[in-house]
Length: 251
View: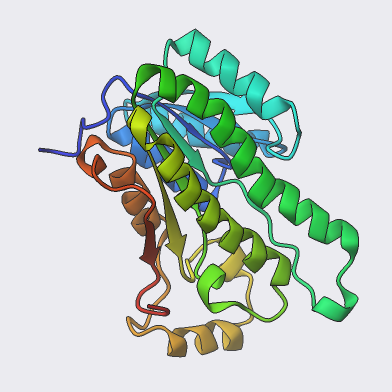
């Protein structure tokens, strides 16, 4: 079966879709035929550019601004999206932040903010989306984790903890929603060539490359392709799985 139109007629929501991996995922889902709601918080210009890129390739979608850390907004906006479009088939929980710092000097407020966005946001969006998916007896939820959930990383205690928690949440929801034909999986990228890694000093990038068996950083498109597979009908018998896309960095 060709992947080109494998999501035709489906509705997808991608959180944190204005740039990087989120933008690549939004564009890939649209390329496969899905109507894509592009979520963002403050980066309206970048989100609009993502939507324009989708439309330039013949796809369709809309902007869907809300903060996943807000306790009410995700449920409200997802309800409106699902009712307006008549369905919600795919949710990609990509929105996330990293507020790095060493444990002994790490501020409590940064710990709480990271939890609210990375883990709380995934929980809130999944809860809202699952209501519609369970009713239709079809759905795909894909969560963006990270290689640091398994291997850890100095200075990223909060980020690693939230991503490890996200993988536990993925497995629990997979069991909970399976009877309603809703699958829940995660993709755990390694070091990916995005704006964040582009800003790293050259010696740091070089050190990372020595750790990766494939000898290069991954691309946002490679992550997006993995997400699109888990979001597709072809992945109907895959649930509770964490798919590593890390070039062999951690197995």
